[in-house]
Amino acid sequence: MTPTLYAWLAAALAGAPAALLAAGAPPVPDAPPVLAPVSMPKPGGAATPAASLFASPAASPATLGASPLPGPALAPARTPAPISAAGRPVPPRGTLLAGPTVVPIDLITDTVHKLEPALLRTLLKRRDGLLAVTGEPRCSIAVHSMRYQTVGGQGEPADAGAVIMLPSGTGPECSGPRPVLLYAHGTVLDKTFSMARLNGEARLIASMFAAQGYIVVAPDYAGYGSSSLPYHPYLNAEQQAGDMVDALRAARTAYAALGAHPSPQLFLTGYSQGGFVALATQRAIQLQHADEFTVTATAALSGPYALVKMADSIFSGHPNTGVTSYLPLLTTSGQRAGAALYAAPEDLYEARYASGIESLLPNKVRLDDLVSKGRLPKGGALFARDSQPQAADASAFFADSNLVRTSYRNAYLQDMASNPCERDPAEPLACSPQHNLRKWMQRNDLRTYTPSSPLMLCGAGKDPVVPFANTAATHAYFKAHGAAPVLVDLETPEEGDPYLPFKQAFAKERDTMRADAVKKGNDPVKAVSDRYHSRLAAQFCLMAARSFFQSAMP
Image (cartoon, rainbow, N blue to C red; front, side, top):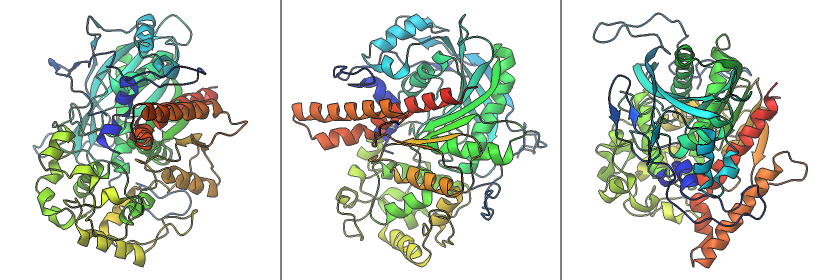
């Protein structure tokens, strides 16, 4: 989950795929983005400068006998409003606080309030291959920002921003009642990030879904963009699912002002962190909000669903690319939620990094600058050079000037030995960890329920950022409980597979990346690894997700 990888869709736009579904498509060199960042006007105020991407449980027990897990419950839609510290009533969750406000789309030479299909097609075609990812635009797109009431990781009142991408046109796919896509974005470290800026990830989602006739509701998440929350509740399944539900509630209010006509069909998807959030949202709606919403289908893409398994693997000596960036996000989220992951940051982090780390991410300062200033270690040094055990291929994560104290790691490993989890794929969380970080991972692990609506899990088997073991373990858990989702591993093409074209295109681009690296005298393994999560798996899983949703249409 490296920051340079997590703006995965920005990378997809900065360098178009060398070969997609069109057989024999030529390699395409990297190029600057076709669209400039879009300014996001705050409701009732002037536009703020656009900021580019860096380059990027459960409130109730599961249905299969799992014990209740602690945490702030998602508030019902019409829970009586609490009173703020200032003595004023807090609006109910999901209240539309501001907007919807049209977001001007900056095309460098012009500014439009609606992006027409012909112009969008021209812009996409300039990437010489991106059009093959998104498909031919069918509908015009208008982007509207809004702000709504939600909660933070402690259940404290908070606000957050979101956008509604609205399709229009004369064709039947663009008019009349339209399906709704609730989209969860991937991890970004830029605190000013907003899906209202139609660049990078937001632009690709608009092109792939809104331009195909979906009403897209895309939250920024609490702690980003226009949100006043001073931190982000990263991978807090309760809060993040609740944030998504609250955005959907606010969108229902905004539809009338926009003249939008949503159909009963509701689709959920997201990539990386967003894959986790999408699956957590499916669970929350199924278990807690079935009287408000009905999910048609969910596609969770390359997400860290099996948090206990992933964290145990990291501390066992198999760290993931980007871990030194997302660990501070995760631990701050846990601390804010009362998980007591440490008494003081110095208990977990080496002294040189501990000061200020709880407010370090997300940040308005670029990651490279944070590293150069010594706020985070260089090269992904998570553990000390002499800390054991170490996987044979993980030496880069063990170095001097490391992030995590050896004493903290040793305590975690001792708890793993005393209280092992993952002994039964059908009941992986049938364990009682005593270490607070492991408890927090268990609380937010999503293997706690049985999906009752169609589900796809997509990923790629060699992902260095979010290991495919998350997807495989979650699939195994659901299958053991009689609800096996559609499983797509882009690395395993098989005849007769309905997703075979996407897998073949994935393999073709991967091989082209390798060949291009060799021609340039670069390391082909590193060339693929650097773009594997951000570009390869991302775009082809999104294509598979859209195909899955189309098959679920009545």
